[in-house]
Structures are given as C-alpha cells and as structure tokens.
Image 1 (cartoon, rainbow, N blue to C red):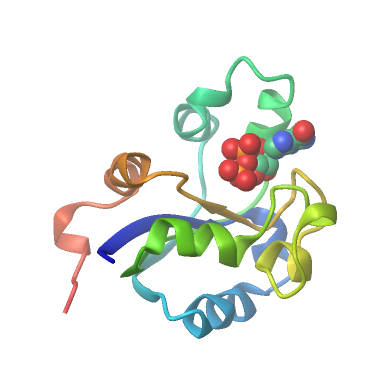
Image 2 (cartoon, rainbow, N blue to C red):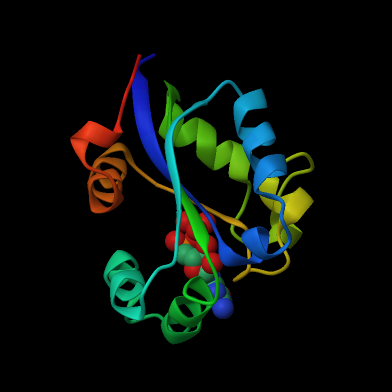
Length: 141
Ligand code: GDP
C-alpha cells in the first residue's frame, strides 16, 4: 500500500448539471481526500495539450470541443493507491459498461460526456497534476 495522488477532472457535462457536489461526495465516500481543486475554463490550446496522447484518435476533435464547452473542476485526490482506486470509483469509459455505483454509471451521459477524468498511472498522475497545479497549491496536511 502506498499513499498516492491522482488528477481528477469533473467534466463540462457534470458542471452543467450542477452535480459537482454529488461527484465530490462519491469521491470522499470512497476514502479519497480532495486536497486541491479549482473551477476553470479550458482553452482549446490547453485541452489539446492535455489530451495530446489521443491526437491520432478519431474522436480527438470532438473530445477537445466537449472539454472547452463549459467549466471544468480540476482536482488532486490523495489516498492509499489513489490512482487505481479512483479508476474503480469512476467506472468504465463507456457508462453502458460501468458498474453500478460508479460515478460514470450514476452520472455520465455518453462515452464522451462521461463526467470525470482520472489519471491512468502514477507517472501520468504526476505529469497531469503538475500540468494544472503548482507545488504551493498542494497542501497535504
Ligand atoms: P478514460 O481513461 O476512461 O477517460 O478513457 P480514454 O483515455 O480512452 O479516453 C479519454 C476520453 O475521451 C474519455 O474519457 C471520453 O471522454 C473520450 N472518449 C473515449 N472514447 C471515445 C469515443 O469512442 N468517442 C468519443 N466521442 N469520445 C471518446
């Protein structure tokens, strides 16, 4: 067991429906601590850079347009095995495949508008956290 941090993003479909509190409740109920969060509007340039690994995929342009369509809440979550735990709490990418009780099953609208992002590895979590947050914004106490 190790204490990790992971990056979460509450996506525009969720901010539009005012369910950020519901999602935060589900996160906290899982035992993860929200140690930093801010509500921001992504630019096309920033969203494209964040999702650069997907730039060859057919849905890339749609994904970027969706991510800039409204505010997002970027968050740092901390806890035991936070990266894998949050992936379980989120559920499968496609809400149709997600398990009952997961954020995506309970909240997502579609495979694209799936309410949340979570880092998929410890290495990516480090990169994604530093993409949005500076050291001084992360208080671990
Ligand atoms: P994740 O790690 O579960 O978020 O999934 P991926 O890394 O594979 O995809 C990143 C994001 O792209 C997903 O969370 C969705 O918002 C979006 N996405 C994934 N697959 C599709 C797809 O087939 N069509 C569309 N329109 N969007 C997709």
